[in-house]
Image 1 (cartoon, helix red, strand yellow):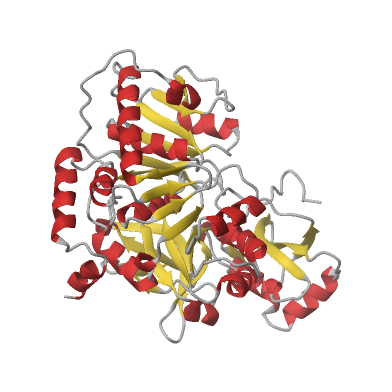
Image 2 (tube, helix red, strand yellow):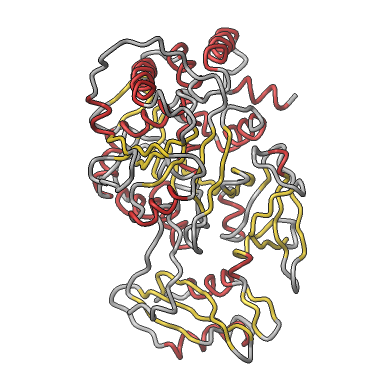
Length: 495
């Protein structure tokens, strides 16, 4: 009954809406483009997407995607079994192309165009089929079948062909785990409705459905950014994007376009909160995902946007599974929150006292031989039953046989007034097995000695957890989705 109430809140039980949805599904089948056709029929001239300079209505967006689909089909007529690789950013052009490629039925790999060329080529080489690579002129990738995106948009159709949209499920592949080593590819088949219960629970619980516009501050080549885009279109919201802009320009677009919701990774939310602090904006809801929040970022968000913030936990494999509200984050910044409807999970004991979080695979479109997806995340339950994230399984430090969670040490480091950011990792040791290495970045204009940091840590945690070595660094590097990049200890320590 609650599910029907949620659908009613979202307006999905409206007879007219249901009829439009039925017709869109009949035309596009399981292809994701049914969302655009449905939007064009139901929302029509309502703004679907804008970058502050160009705006497209749902009807205009769908029309352009159909035109692009026809052009792509003409240019790839003899390569229907190829895999399309889109080296993309959050520009309107690239988002239109994302849908057009799916509309042809080609399997699609999404790669962030900010990745290094060598990483992009490595991902392309991992494909079993031949690849059609779509990239901007500025990338100039040395591949055989390269289609220039700018030329594609300027292409004049030499002949009209009878283009029929693909009705099959268009698989989308996301490269992931690039922060810990070589990328792995996660294939997700879009168009199924396995996620409907979780979707309605998420958007009603957080109040996403009440917002009129969303600023997408995370790459659409990332699972979180892609999901944010799909959610905004499915709910008839205005998606605001801003590629190749600095943080001041992005803040100006948020104000100009009257964004009410920002979806982003913690790093992007921190920068936007800093730029919008004290300014007259309409942001009333923050959705964080893609990486764990930290206390500094949470405090900054609250100062600029208020306490209506939710942190989403999930993975490319398991999608969004848990949502933590502000009260839970105040209890513990690493709280996972409540599991969404239909999400089933369990904790599996690993070596020592660690517990890995497993998600039921039948509730996602990723299959597993065991029926469970191993997230690789370590969690504990507090005295109230709240799940607390403790870090990645492969990041856990085993020192003298004791399991040590880096995130616990980082939390204590970040509680020190002088420390702006921290990263704790490990190093092999012949006697202890592994030892703890901590990298810390200090706030500008302040100083604190390594000895003083160690002294303070010993006052709040067991001596065995105190870092064996602390290095003070000037900056940290981050992935495009806001995750800290592990320093290369073999290559020397950062200066």
